[in-house]
Length: 381
Ligand SMILES: *Cc1c(COP(=O)(O)O)cnc(C)c1O
Image (cartoon, rainbow, N blue to C red; front, top):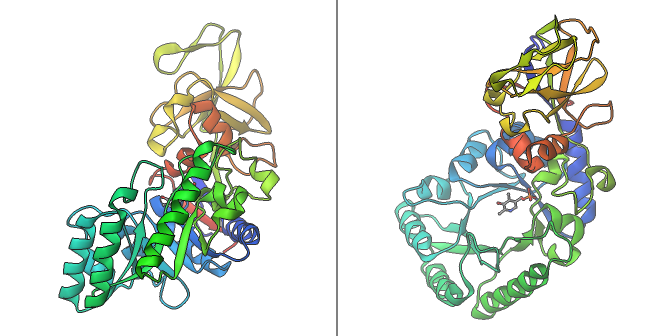
């Protein structure tokens, strides 16, 4: 690190990420590992995280959009070490570029199959296609009633040489709620869809349905491939599933800043926009130069935690675009003293999960929303 950013930075511990991949692989020892790096690797930085995951044994990399998948391929990821797959297509997306880049294409419906077979014909290439069945998530995916038609169309396209069906896959709605009745129903629906497709003559290389909670808690969901996202970044999918510590997972991102001002103020001072905090007595205030413009949730105004000079403090009043204030209760740390917003939690700092609780959201959203104004600093590469 030559020039360390001083206002705020997100330290990304790639050794922790690699260790998390190994922990998750040990949970699903017979399955291949797809590292899910959509949304800039949940805010951690897509290319460095994909590379680290491959070093730790990932043989697949998953993204949502084709643009993300193409960016990985342009960075040299996914040649002989790992396959790249993406699954969120919108009409007019770059099918041909993706086919030529040897990306596996997730397909949920007939419109997508029509666009991609046209692109494959134009390119003179066979597209690698992974068919998604909606087993009960009720979001993306082909409904079971429409599945036979999609399978038939794929068999025709395979005969024509435009398509090879390489995978059949699905996604859980409630795998993070252990014992939820939808889990068994979706698992059964998935088994049916695979049976139908294979019975009709498709020969997928991989069948997969397990996200992080599936990988951690549902061995019957592992099939040929698991697709963890959040757990690879060291966060638990939900408190109900367990804590990251219990699974031996280590949070990868630490959000670090420093005090930009420390001042003495009288009793009765209204603090920040709206004066939602009023000092109950003469005190000291510290200014943390990070705000919702950096991705902190404004909903954590009055509740968001931060470790300042060895003590956990709470955002006093509104979190603004660029800064918020903490009541230091008479302590006088120096300007420039460290302020850790979240990290692994083992040095007294809050965790992303603490911020999620403070803002009424999930850890996924806390790390993913850390914005482009916050430089990522990679450690333990
Ligand atoms: C995001 C995503 C995952 C990873 O989910 P986690 O809960 O973060 O493990 C897996 N599969 C698909 C299709 C996804 O969109």
